[in-house]
Length: 87
Image (cartoon, rainbow, N blue to C red):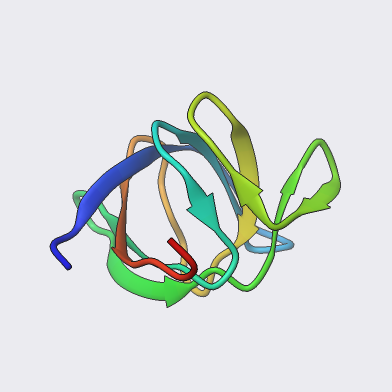
């Protein structure tokens, strides 16, 4: 599967290491995502995500989600799905 852009990082919270994302497409727990930016370039599996502090399994276009990230992300970084689960 080719990488497909699904959103953009809107904020990073350093202490809990959480990235806030604005989604343009569907995202699901278990998907593998890539974060790409000027100084950002890594992949990880989505282990959990939240909308308004409530845990969700899937999120779609126009949703604002928060997810734990394994490295620092920056506002404006692009988010790509590398591998989807369950679609």
